[in-house]
Each structure stands twice: as C-alpha cells, then as structure tokens.
Length: 303
Image 1 (cartoon, rainbow, N blue to C red):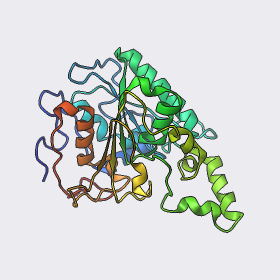
Image 2 (image 1 turned 45 degrees about the vertical axis):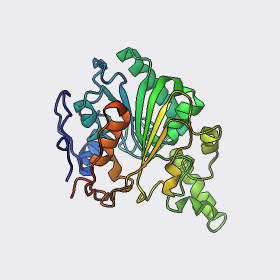
Image 3 (image 1 turned 120 degrees about the vertical axis):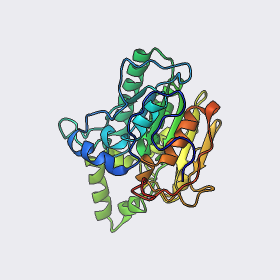
Image 4 (image 1 turned 90 degrees about the vertical axis):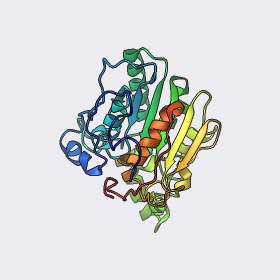
C-alpha cells in the first residue's frame, strides 16, 4: 500500500482538500455532458502563485479527450498541493461546431497556437514569466513540443512533464502501417482519417511533422524535462519512442522497481503513482520517494 499522504490528500501546508478520484471512470460523465467545464481545482483566474510553487501549471489533455475527462484527478491533486492549475480544450475538429467531448483531433499546428494563447493568458493573469506544462499523450508530446521547439515557447516554460507522451511518432500498435496495406486502399483509408482528424495521423511514425518538431534536437535551453512512461503502453508504441534525449531530461519507466504497476496508456492519466512523480518533477527540492503499489490497467484505483 502507499506510504506518505493518503490518496488525494494534500501534503503538509497545502490548502484543501478537494476530492481526488484516482479512477478513470470519474471522467466519463463530465466528458459526455460537460466537455467545456474545467475540472475541480482548475481555472481560478484570481489564483496567485506562492513562493513555494512559483509557476502556475497548465494541463494539456490527450487526443480525443477534453479537459473534463482528462484531469478529474490531476487538477484537484495539484491544487491540493498548492499549485495554481489551468486547463483548456483545443483541437476541436474544424468541420464540427462548438466543443464536443472528443477534442484534440484538429491540426497540431493550430492546436499549438491555442496552447500559446493559453500560456500568454495565464502568464498575464498570474504575473509570472514562466509556466510549467504537464500533458498526457499528444498534450505531453508532439503538441507541447511543437509549441516549445517550433513556436519558440521554450522561453516561457520552466518545466515540461510528459505523461505517456507521443514523442517521435507512434506505430499505434502497427495501425500506422495501414497506409501501406493493400495499395491503394490502405493509403486511401489512412488519408481519409487524416482529413477527418488530422492529429491522429500527425502523431504516426514517419509523418513529417515529427521531423519538424524534433529534428533540431528534443530539448531547448532553460527547460527541465520529465517523461513518465509505461512499458505496457498500447497507444504510443514502441514505448521507448516516448523517451527524450538532451540536457535536463529525466526519463522514468513506471515499472522500474515496481512490477506491480501495470498501468497502460489511459490509466496513467489517473494513476496515483504518476501524480506523485509529477509532483516531484514540479518541485524537485521537496521530492519524496514514490512507493510501489499495484496499479491496474484501465482502472488504476483498483488494487
């Protein structure tokens, strides 16, 4: 069982607590009914960072989700621990009106511009020079890095934490190779997916956008990077594609020293172990050992 603070409880000196459900199911109802609604603990635009936690944290959700489904655990957990937390939706498909539950499917280049706008708004509201980014999958990978590396956002970011990040392209468990299956049918299907939901294809291995983002090196000066990776990831494959190379990089495999952690791609959003690692990455001066305890695939709160 976990040591230290009880699940979802703040560490010493933090305000709160807000309930923290380490359960992927907690995002299902908000995702379906209220995709535009920020999760508990997020988007208090009067929040002012403290000396202990001087950087506001912007959470960037993964593909085909929204802020509502992704951060029902992460937002209140960080808020309980003293952070100003902000979330947003991005990448609504251009051919659909309004905000639908399946966000983050639009062109990554346009989505990165949306992230840039949110960073600027948060900096202005909180009076800070730099923010910290915590993202999952696309939000912790190629989208965030397009902002950092292509749009030059690195000088506005102190720490970049990627949870199951889609760095360097993914085979999508070999689905990406559909493009070469039974020519020309496979390529036609693949291209039509790209027309409907560009972000799906842009994250596939061999697509040009990855070369644009990472071709000049993974990292940029002044940013500290942490990746949190599961060897059981079934979406960003092979899982070692997620690792970064460069200065100020810490790559963490969740199964190192903890065979009981069987989290896969989705469950890392709601894994208590993951959020303890995130907390350590955001505040390395106060980092504490992350204990090993069972984490189930898909339903991480079940032990």
